[in-house]
Image (tube, rainbow, N blue to C red; front, side, top):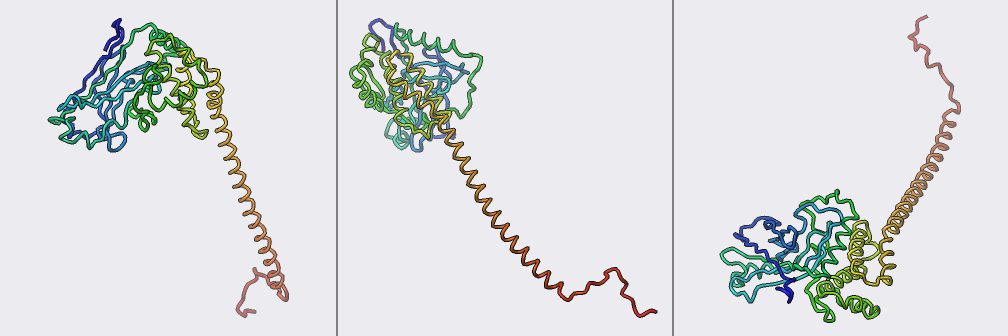
Length: 343
């Protein structure tokens, strides 16, 4: 796929998985491949990250990534129908990968019942084929994005690699799929869940649309996707969710969004307020713990007071009993010999 100037195209990697029915693993990784000047691989969960579905992800973290690294990717997965190519299942999305969000995809790509149905055509001779196509763009506006990304990279300590571990997929990636791409005001395809949020803010702030009029179509899609992600985060998260990881995630989304030069003066106070919730939560948790400590000490004090009163009562009873026993009692010399009548 190319534009008139030949600067826009999809590059493809094909993965043939054999002996699919005999796979006895939770996760399967493709060979590494190089597309759009980056090394990737495909991750497949044959039994599903969500039970009952085949899960497919694009993994950007094949190599150690420097702190601050980011890369836009517009990509689509194809599960080839070997019996009827017209029935091939395709899902498409965009993502700005970074050093903390290195994998993105579809937890519910296709139901396993449909995939494994011998009449469906997705598995033939116990083999299935998965293709990933990544959009490679060299337009002037896209280069501006890359320059901004490089600027961020240069402002961080690149000697601090992010270590790749086997259990790295973000919770959001594993449990949430933003769904299909839909048209947004003729500006490009945006993830469906973002569109109502974008419609709302663009109606209130028309400059959001105006500021992107002279940009390339791909740049505009990335810009409004970045805005949609921030809005979706603020819409779906609650105060109690704003722990350290959530604040770091929002900070990354915010830094990405600022690269597109929207007028965000209306949004920044809300983002900064959300980022400040971590301190509020920490103080609330600390105060709650202090309150629990006070309550526990008060209960312990009451228990000890009751025990003291009981001890004082027992002491008084013991004294009275002692006085009664002393009445008419003559003390004897305990060291005296008993004797046996010897003169």
